[in-house]
Image (tube, rainbow, N blue to C red):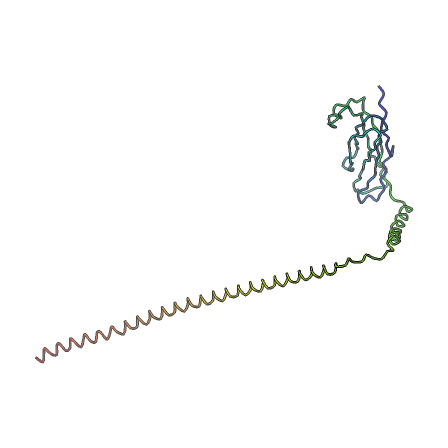
Length: 246
């Protein structure tokens, strides 16, 4: 059985061209048009899936509708002597009635119902003419903008400067308030330090006074003891002397 001819119209039909430099992502578009009277399911495949990002890579095209596929080539070191072997294939199949699960469609499709188209990838470096044209377009852009923008510059709205002044005053007042709070906190911290120092000094002086009183008590006790002994000795001496005299 002969293979079904591709029902979709591809633009471009054969080659996907990517124009360098390839130091950044390079994107090219592929358009799929459905000229038939039946909806079509499509899927895009590549021989180098790690080198390309395809959005969307599958989907559903209504009769008469067109879908644009973005094919993004990832950055790489381009070698002009190396011929590209990358290829893309667009597979299609007529959508069954009341289709809801695309994965089931591709899982259950029969090989004889499949249609496909193959495209090869072509890498091109910009020519000198392209560089000149790009430079001219870049230079022409400011000129075009200036011609469109001959009108005087936008005048600030009335009251905008006053609004800016009021906002600036609010900011200054907030800064002053924060500075005052910081100064107040610093004073409170200094007062707490002074109070703690005075409390430590008072405790030290109390301990010194108590120690001095104890020492004076000990000295008084030690001085009163010999006096008491002298009195007792005098009483005994007087008692013995009285006995001898009598």
